[in-house]
Length: 463
Image 1 (tube, rainbow, N blue to C red):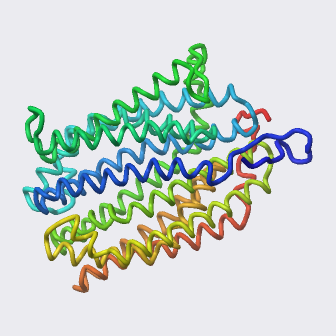
Image 2 (image 1 turned 135 degrees about the vertical axis):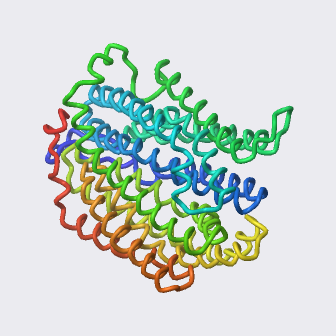
Image 3 (image 1 turned 90 degrees about the vertical axis):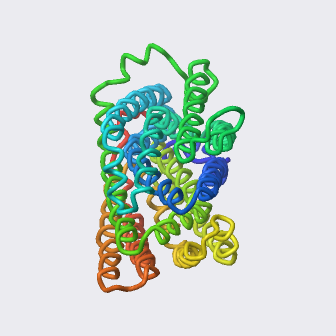
């Protein structure tokens, strides 16, 4: 545990904050388990053929777009709960959690209805064959039925981590993954009397597991088993207009960022699907799942940095906030480089394990090599981007995403495809994207402007 001054210049009044690793490892392990389930899901579905693998890739991209919008609420949750917790204003942390949960659930319901109606047109945007498009539409439809459950998981996990408890989301995540794996086995191929549902079964298994997890979070909370207390009387302030405005003020740039992120992905994947076909598309999905081990490590340190920066600012410890951001970057950089090198060394065996198709394997190996070498740049995005969001500075990461993903990656990908270059060139557009974002985020964090963007008084926190 790291001991920091609660208020600058008050050495006698201290608050104990967790260290980077103490917060990061449960988040890393949680997301690593989810990544492993993603890999197993692709492996299981890939046995049904490249069309099924491409369909799940498309379905996940559409679904992640919806989840990204809901996750934007959780960005505001993290920043406000961490700030309140650092200031030891526990009542405000409780109220913020309630407001976030109700707001996230409402957003989930609003997003679900149009997707259920337009599942197939959304799947058709990627330019795949008829079979893959039909399967993707089916996957999107069934997984979207569980949007509210995903929202509950995102918000409760974000609130608990912001309060320094990363272990409860870990244990619930372990149970979620076990249920999901069992559901894959039972529903995709048909066991224990259940029908073989194929791609649809993969969606139902994943959604049902998160439904159980969301229920577990709520039961533990109501029964007083979580670090953030539950008080029914606080419901009257859950939709307090000022608090909702604060959540939206911090969260809406993150929502736009995620929207831009997904639009950029649609364009990028659309280029691959239209110009290079199902094999290249499936290779992208498989390669991302293999390298997701790196991403979850980065995301774990991003959560840790975001929490500690927010808590330090809540305690008026600006120097501690800056130090937490740089420590997060060092940990993230070392971890992602080490894992990236290991993945590159075993790229071909892992690709062969995932699918038995020579063309897809060759494309997958090329993609892993390219994305593997940009891990240091991705580390900057995870660590410093997370630290800025923890401070409430969500607009600058949005600018970086727009410049890197739309301005660099998509522009280069379209140019390479138009010139008739191989798909490896399109994959390589990733390098320009992450290089530009890393430079922009580094400059912003060094400037220190994020430290005074919001005062505790503006966020209704009383240190």
